[in-house]
Length: 312
Image (cartoon, rainbow, N blue to C red):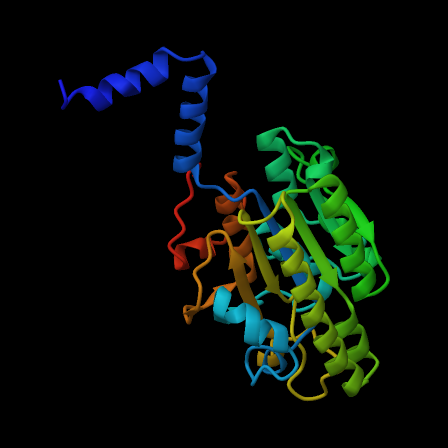
């Protein structure tokens, strides 16, 4: 009798109590097996060169270097192997394919974006996804031209004018609408460099680093996002090794960029030396949020952290 007591007690709990208890138990079991993140946020620091981020001493990114790096996974051989300009870089990140589109905002990605995959597979409203950008031409990444996806599965677009404006928009929308998939473009680093303002370039990088810290603190403290959200910080492209004001070719300065992952599915203090590229982010978002990315060409960086998705 004693050996069977726990089983009897369990049966009484399951069948002798109100009908909702089995449903609760089933839900808990499913959640434990699925293990998906609730939300993913990707911050793209536009046009930062790797030697000034994680390829140096961390002087210009003190918050990410000193506080966030030990809490997450850092990829030190992360690259843009496509076109090293803003729109193609962002489009490659959100589609998981190398996008050879113009940089002027006239052409959308030709393959579906993570926003479209997520909304279509999960039957979600547009408020579940967000693109916040300091460059209006990036509205094109809210959805693709793919005939099976497109505008009806696109993301909300929130334009801004500078880094502070973009992050303010993001924080406001996160608080009000709780989108589950967000891509935010911080433009100031790139704009200062194009103006040949070396001091402005570095101070803009320092400010972007601070704003990433503000966003991470919010995600850790907000009741909707805390403990179940992944944050990626990366770049769309780097800059020339010489004559830093421009970018767009295949030089090492343009191709070698940063990627830091924090939160759900990441490993604290891990440094990945395996070469990875921009098109590996979209499959990782799919793994983290539990949706499929059938037209993506990359392979999920979650394989580097040991994260095992439940719906793949």
